[in-house]
Amino acid sequence: MSKKNKNKRFGVVFSTADDYDYQYQSNESEETLPVAQQRLRVLIDRKKRRGKEVTLVTGFIGAEDDMKALAKLLKTKCGVGGSAKDGEILIQGNHRDKVVDILLKEGYSQTKKSGG
Image 1 (spheres, rainbow, N blue to C red):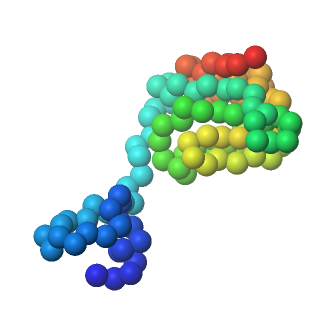
Image 2: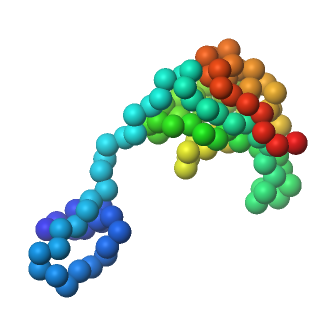
Image 3: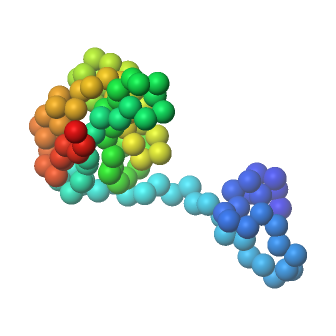
């Protein structure tokens, strides 16, 4: 077995059983839900950010590339930086109302504001 495959083992690191069959992480990406079925939540977050605000978009279900494309659209329309990772889109600054308006115009009809 090559070292490349060992790094993709899922769960078990080592087994003494000769007939143990390792499960490997799949490279298949999750299928992206249609725009109208996405249930996105937009909130302001200050935790672990030294008091600085970020607009956080959660609830995206789909491929990483699709989420990054949506993040790029939001960053461009807001004129700020941000990132997309771990199923969340971060937009620098307090742009909650603007992000919700953009998402609704793009067809994300189940988008809601969360938090205070």
